[in-house]
Length: 429
Image 1 (tube, rainbow, N blue to C red):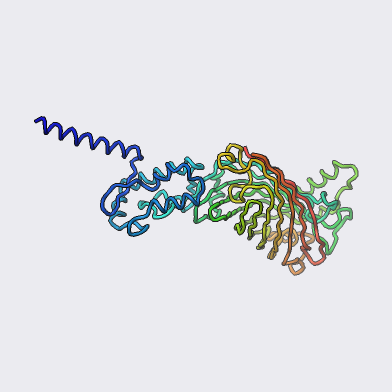
Image 2: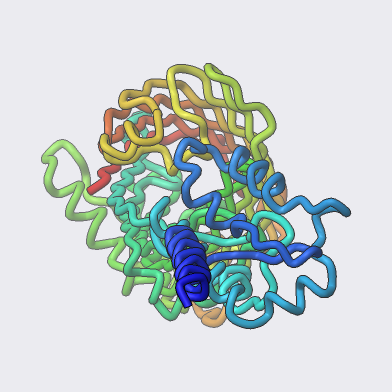
């Protein structure tokens, strides 16, 4: 009797120890081909707090998922993980990623696939996170910095990036990203104004640029992949071109605020009201990423009633700066410190691009409303345009200021080279 009682007590004690060890691991076990219990690779990554870079995480995940025959799970093992254990693995995966950066972005197909899969991934799971960061950026463009008042003469853009905007229905038409990265969702409001080479002459100046202005609301998504050094931005814009965009009111109010400025004449002949519905996609690919210098290739495509074109160029940065793909340029001081990034940045940049133009409503008039009094025929617009700019960025913690000087080649047959300046202020809150 005593011997039986001792045997039962020993068995009970062994079972209790086994259960306690399993609970400490979050209940996440995998089964190898011999039926032995092993820690889930996702759980191992959860406790690997010292691994801060995505490259190390990918390497660690591959090492933890290796089997004697290779990285792929045997068929028997895969069938065994279809039931309960795989659910625990992915619950642990959700917890791991949530503790790192934020929540998983379920707008992305790869994220939904990760959560609904019944088989643990043989490699690092493809998951796109939703950034918790919040930004407000105000951009001002004007040729007054170059003592001119012609062509693209004034522009204002306000961008708000906030995680709550991931639920914006317009964000559903952005292009999905088939990899791992971080998503930022935002809204923008944009107004741009265009005039002839002089605003002091009344009437229509034939052979010159027509008056035009547009106003639109944009919804965009930025996907940042620091491992592949790749960034994708897709945006859809909805608004109006013509008098309802209030370009005439803005320019006349600005000129009226300074007694030395004469009232601009000729706005009554501006491009007529029409719909603005445009879609654009921009790709940034890192080619060189060193401590003091970065070099990226940049390409953009636009399609819609406002602009239809495609462009490609380069971005060169040099100075004291964080890696281009580590974030969107700035972050809160606490986050920069956590990720071992510079609190203060100061660097110069140079951009250059060539653009193939298919359609430009500010020159040719609205695509749907053809009643504008004066426009430039499509045969007289420049279908190949070059643009370059040079600028300076200074930032500290969650505040950034940038200044940029643009130079644009002629946009139509009788046009001139044009210059204007840009100032941008960004706040992280």
